[in-house]
Length: 217
Image (cartoon, rainbow, N blue to C red; front, side, top):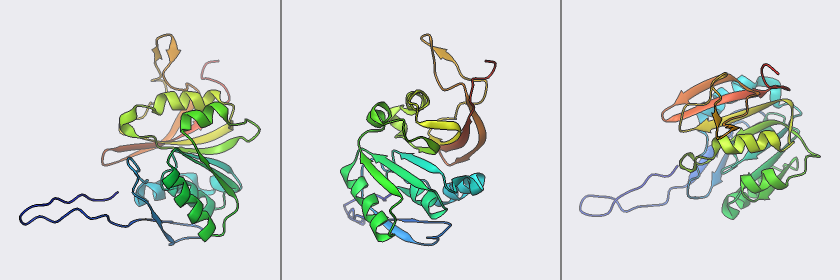
């Protein structure tokens, strides 16, 4: 994230800092990539990403991954560096998507594609011929999209049995057994089991595993 400055006596004028992300592990370990200023873009911090991929360990190897709300592409690029078979990056920002394409070109990576559309549109229109075993979801906190997008992902037919889903939220993540019925409908997929969780500042993050059937069915 970029910092903001102030103008006036004894205050610095606002400047645009160069945004960079660092790939933590794998084939491209230590590579630094630049990403543009895009409103709401909030890359997963290095230490959170390191924790996530420690949780995943070898689960990224030869896996098909989906990076929804890709933004800087940090999670998807990290997965590719660690041996993912393919990553689909989805973001509604042309600027962010162009930067991810530039990263892939610079890294000489052909095991990825970039889709410019909203996460909601992608989940409605993407072909279920390609299914994903690992999904990264980090929607804008203020938009309140997490639960509805998770339900849309579960019903889209895009998930493999036993898929893992990584979520970030400004609110505590749903715990197993805490799923409620709102207006006659589930508020969160009941067959997603929270296997790991953490908190960094105001960010709650966790890794869910998709069960084939809902608990008790």
